[in-house]
Amino acid sequence: MGKKERLDKIISNMGYGSRKDVKRFIKDGLIEVNGHIVTKNDIKIDPYIDEIYFNNEKVEYREYIYLMMNKPKGLVSSTDDPMTRTVIDILEDEYLVYRPFPAGRLDKDTVGLLLITNDGKLAHEILSPKKGIDKTYYVEVNGYVEEKHLKKFEKGIVLDDGYRTLPAQMEIIHSDAISKVYLTIQEGKYHQVKRMFESLSMKVIFLKRISMGPLKLDEELKEGEYRELTEEELNMLKRF
Picture 1: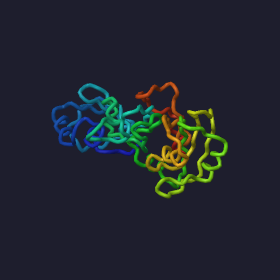
Picture 2: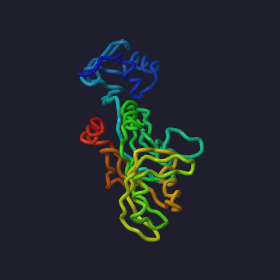
Picture 3: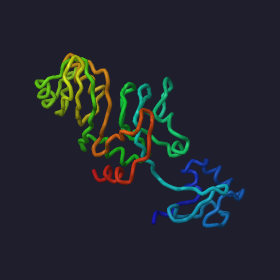
Picture 4: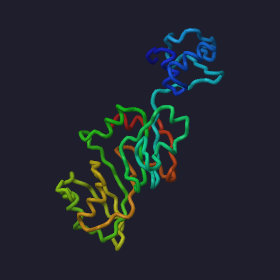
């Protein structure tokens, strides 16, 4: 059982219009609760128990949404940008009414796991430096990555501004003129992964986040695709 709230607030929060709009809808007899047309906008109901219909369509109430996106190149990880498209721009209207935002950022040319939600508390928990959540990336680097580099990452890499990163874990998949590695960090400094390799005179040519804490990117999601988190995934995040 949830907390009872004013009907006009519930309908408005679901994106059906402003509180003023909803009051007009009620006046026009467009909203039913438990089979009865409502006549007062200030009645309080439990949206998880009471059945709400707007213009003969059932209102499926939920407070929060949680989406896993395989972010494509070229999109900015923000809710609005005057210069270019954002990850929010590719969401369907049914999710936009919840006013979602990306929990954390990926660079414009970086792909992979991005959590999009409207749950500010959970986003804050995930992004808090105190949590020290691991973020793992698949990285392709122009340059030979060798065993000697592993210890440098374990000690922390000094970036171009003098900042020493926290210890990072690297696993070499393939070492060649173009090397392939998995890199796990706990921070999210500006262009951090790229700058870490630049400190070793190497250039990142492809970067993909594959996990964040217990949440792993669904390999079936193509770049630009997204889906809702499963109940199991959401529970793992909340327990983490």
